[in-house]
Length: 84
Image 1 (tube, one colour):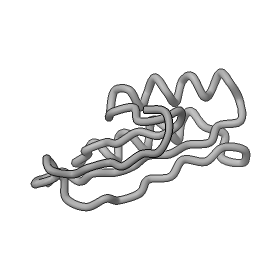
Image 2 (cartoon, one colour):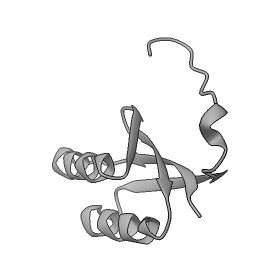
Image 3 (tube, one colour):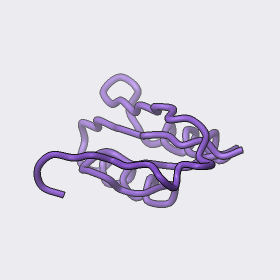
């Protein structure tokens, strides 16, 4: 079963920020500067492990927000204000 996640990150170092961004491109859709939407299964553990190896756990933060089952989300709408 696939689950949708909103993955948001705040990385204090530019080099680590680029590495996190490149890693996340392999897992989901880039929505905004530090926000991705991902549909993950068992790969979520692999994604978390890759990010954990990159970030500085004292300075950086990565949030995984569970949006629920990915199935049936084809009709979902993301509302935004301002620049797309």
